[in-house]
Image (cartoon, rainbow, N blue to C red):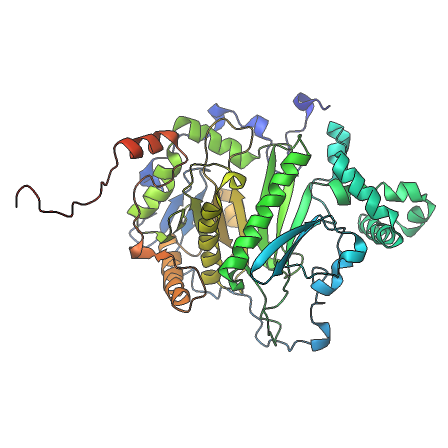
Amino acid sequence: PEDRSARSALSPHGGVHHDQLRPGMLPQIIPESNYLIRMADGTIKQVNPFTGTEVWTVPGRGNRPLGVMPPNPAKLDPAKLDAHCSFCAKLYLDTPPEKARLVKSGDKYATLRHLQVDALFDTVAEFRRVPNLFEIVSFNYWQKNFGYRLPDAIEQHKRSYLASVAGRQHVLRLSEQRLKAAGFDESAWDRMSLDERLQFANAFFGGGHELIVGRRHYIDGATHDHQLASSGTLAPEEHYQYLRFTIDAMRDIYVNNRYVRYVAVFQNWLKPAGASFDHLHKQLVAIDERGVQNEMELERVRANPNIYNEAAVNFAAYRNLVVAENDHAIAYAGFGHRFPTLEVFSKSERSQPWNHSPEELRGVSDLVHACHAATGSDIPCNEEWYYKPPDVDVPMPWRVLIKWRVSTPAGFEGGTKIYVNTIDPETLRDRVVPRLFQLRTEGRIAPIKIAIECPCVPNCLQYNPAVRQQASSHPEFPPLSVGPSQDE
């Protein structure tokens, strides 16, 4: 449907197109000795083993406030409960038609799909899956470039939704709002026929840019506007359901559009991190490429299939950067990032989130939740997911990065491509670990192992078949004998 050889070198989401990244153009394999270096004056230099990003932490530049808590928090108006922004529970009609919602009854959760407009307020959604009103990669992109059409089941739901007067009014109002935001004047809308106006509805029912929106804007019982409900304020079970519901949406996007090569999953928390609303939500964006990050990593994975063990979790363990661990995941203070970053790796042999077992998903969720809770709701941060694209032929582990957006790259970074990160990995670890112990004592996070308690067994990531085979046939650390030894 499109001539890929004639495409621009720029990807639709910015940056260099991956077709330009030939193996000979990529940096050489980075030696371990360069990952993390402390200079005599205290400057810490880091290099990311997967991207080659160079980062310095200069003494004295990290002594600044991190959060964005207002100095004088304002009292909340009780009359605006659940109506603080377009994502709030009393304003369901401010977002495009729901694709699904997660509801709770007692301690059980259930997923409701394709609700009609007159049923939206019959239940309370713990999490909602809704289209993004302003797509990064639009439905028109898929339609014009690939000839994409709505699958039959989605087309049927669209027709059913539009068949009701309330549903049709809902869609038309949001279509008009979207066009005006794009620069169309009111007269252009007025000149359109009803059928022309309803053509914009396809993006709401079959687009590839979606949001997973939480119920709360503020924590339960909040009295002031600094008491926002973040990932870390959720209970561990709520966070697991949030993560599982996101993965269900992610898989659904792949199933419904065969032209999608990668679904980017991320969370922008607070406006300095790119959020439109200070209301908890994740975003999923379908693209027709693997993305530059994946293309760069693939070259290194093919050169060393065990690189995620050797250059990530093993190195972190040897440098005492591991902050938490459980049977299914491990978290550490990352190195070679533009911002202070906590990294959570799944230990599963499965490379993609939707193939994880419930126990494995919960293990990852518990560590991601704990990292957010230790971060605090006043620090702007991005949560980014990385996993094996469906069309990739080598295993890659699923990992989640939580980046604290506490600095702004400026002229020095732009001119040198050396980034100044004000918090080095050891300082990040020392900020997070005491907080994790406190949260665990208070019962606010799952019962995970923290810092020195973590076993940190080498090659704990099981994505690599060679590592799994070696571990099963020749375990590095066999069980200790409980009886007397031969010498005794």
